[in-house]
Amino acid sequence: MGTTYDQLSLDERCEIYRLHAGGKSGRAIAQALNRAPSTICRELARNSGTQVGYKVEWAMTQARARRCRKLYRLECSSTLRELVLDGLAMGWSPEQIAGRLELEQGKVVISHESIYRYIYWRVNSHKKYLHRLLPRAKFKRGWRGRKGGSSVHFIPERVSVADRPAEAADRRQPGHWEADLMLFSRYRQAVLVAHERTSRLVLLSHHTSKAAEPIADRLIALLRRFPAEQRRSITFDNGSEFAAHRRIKAKLRMATFFCDPHSPWQKGGVENLIGRIRRWLPRKTNLENLTQRDLDDIAMDQNLTPRKCLGFRTPLEAFLGKPFNIGVALEM
Image (tube, rainbow, N blue to C red):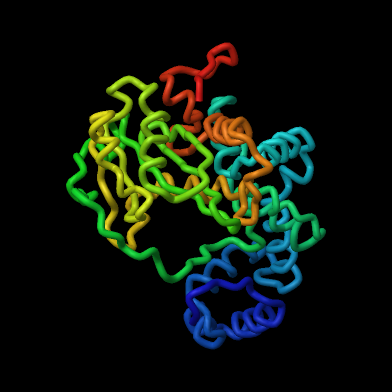
């Protein structure tokens, strides 16, 4: 038996009918079909009639109906479908859409799995490419891992992330940040990304090089506008662009920490964020066509997107500690 599950085929259901009618047990049928006994028992329990027992045609009809019911709500409810499609058009993930609807209406409206099923059903059945509206626009679900990692550079007075305070690691205390540099295919083009670990607030800044001192100065300019309790520490990877971290410590009195070699997952918040932002800023983007205002708009879009980890509040709501009011402006 394999490690993945496939739907029972017509031939398998015919064999189940033949063996079951011959008095074979569920375990014996499973062994004959190289299936799990639970699969056979579930099939017989779900698709047998009280009067006629297990019939192949009835079993196929019931299985097909169950699959259709999973799509029924979005296919038949135009109001709910428009809400979901509007959320996708704004760049929200199915989980964010489902969670936000539940938060606003006070009850479960639809599950994120139902939205995913609808999207990929449309892709497979109708060639409607709704997957392109997903944050990562993947044609199929699942992880696509990549091998390798960045080289480790010598960084003066480097402090390991293992020494970061527990209140920073568990995200309960605000003011702990992560930062990284988004690189692009054109030479001397980069975007500096800063991410607050508790509220998931996002700051973006355009850069024309990987030089360490200008990047440190820009981080100082971005973070100094916040009160001291909102800037306690910042975590980097081992890129040479963060070698001037001592300037940040001196100017802002923020503790600085660095991930272990080849372990960018230790600052997973900003890594996840960059994956989301790549939808608007793919690697082939020419940043000469974008202004800092454009980057601020992308950051604000992220700051107004509900997050599951925040109870489907937005990062801006979490940062301000109250629901966002359009009259309240946060200078980015």
